[in-house]
Amino acid sequence: MKTRATGLIVVLVGAALGMFFASFSTYDFAEHLDRQTHDLHCSFIPGIAGRPEAAGTGCHVTLMSPYSSVMRSSVWGGVPVSMPAMSVFAFIAFWAIYLMITKRNGDRRGTMFLLLATALPLITSLVMGFISFTKLGAACKLCIGIYVSSLVVFVGAMMARSASAKLQAARGTGGPADETVPADVYDPRMDKPISFPALAGAFVLGIAFVFVPVVVYASTLPNYERYIGQCGALEHQGDPQGIMVSIDPGSPGATEAIEVLDPLCPSCKAFEQRLQASGLAPRLSRKAVLFPLDNTCNWMLSRAEHPGACTVSEAVLCAGDNAREVLDWAFAEQDRIREAASHDPAAATRLVRERFPQLSSCIGTAAIRNKLSRSLRWAVNNHLQVLTPQLFVGGVKLCDEDSDLGMDYALSHMLERRGGAR
Image (cartoon, rainbow, N blue to C red; front, side, top):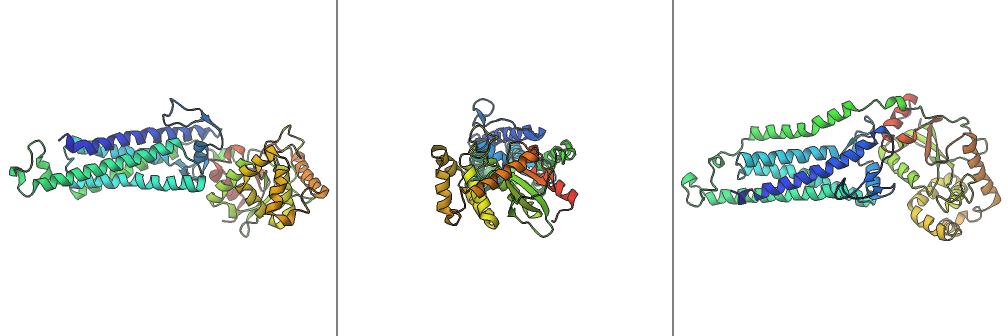
């Protein structure tokens, strides 16, 4: 019997590892429910090794991505996908233990049900892995641990299923007296496999394993709605000097919004990705105020946080109605532009002119530099922080604490209050 349970043992090991990695991933997510930023100790051995991860690194990018949770517009931050993953692994472990305790490791229906159950985390891991590497360009070690665990439980379930099939074949049709079935392998319960109603009940139980924790989690969260709209407002929303550029007109009836951004700011790029993934972008008619974090033009800084940002900001202003095209290019080429400009201040100008030769006669002129200076003055007159991005919806600020995990929840509520287009 011991050899016949090898597959189930492999399943138990994989399920235990899956619960381990998923629980730490859920813990990292839950740490941010105070609407603050926390370090992520991303390691293959959570809590034992690894340094805190900074913004832009694998686990941080994955956690802050729109794919780390679901139900984001109805629950602040959403429900982390690692939570149902933890529940699925728990159910798989439960079913494997059940088969072992009841000596049904040779039950063809029971092992097939286990195989189908383990296919769920495997398929989910394949999808999430594809998203991580193709859309996010980042790998989270905890996520990789979950992916590997999913593969282990599936392989173990295949072993268990194969073992049960061989056992059934060895028994032939001779029943208990069949000499082809060793005494230590035969169990009378193999003559009567698990009934379909019992399997249906197990399926319902599996759903409960996932559904109950999600409901408890969502119902016990604090009320974050009271924070919405409490982070300040613009003193002067107008644009008398024409320093704003349209970056997204939105749908008809969209709510007017002003975004203070730096085209070479990684946080601005990430914010744009989250906004587009949320589906809320069409409900906003966005104009941008350029605020490059580069001391080449920004007198509020002692050093360049994002080298080359002043030049690229000039290009966005020069582009006028085509500002979105320049901004998309800047977001896509941020690393290359910043790296080049950090070694050679003139590199950003060359890169911009190479990509947008039609803007060459505008970039660097006194007129456009004066316009960028007025853009910075606009921020000063509104007493804004030296920070990007900042989004103002109808003049009301989206709290900085709500610009990542809580963006879908906070922004959708802000739009509902203003009756923004859907």
